[in-house]
Length: 212
Image (cartoon, rainbow, N blue to C red):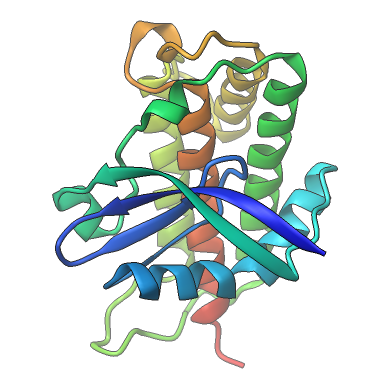
């Protein structure tokens, strides 16, 4: 069975992202669009358990990518962040869709937490000796989530990590007309895909850099 996946391409001169618009967190990059497609498909076996955990299993053994939107990238894209918000990110979310997106974001956080907890503190370095170790990656992800919450209008002062996550999930779970959350920058669909992508990107980084 072939699963059709609606995708956006976010392209800058030196890096291109392919982003699944209906499946938060499934987004991979490459130096070219072909390389991004290759990385995207290679991530399918890792991504499928995430959505299954969320309660929305999908067969990703055979995938047909349908590019429905192209977004101009910038220096953020080249740095490795899918930052561009497209027209389709502004589509409304009804009760069922809001619950689905929220469940996938929560599952991405769960995967990140479990991968980090099982990893050693010292991770294998990259080809030039770089890369954070486990605790610094965890701190980075948690800190970014706090910043993301602020962009969504969540007041995070005095909240711990579980409380920040709970507030974000409550906001995502609320049906939306597609306008930016709290009148700020991010609509629900973009917020869900950005948060889930960041958690999974670093979960998979930890897995890839764990000595075997």
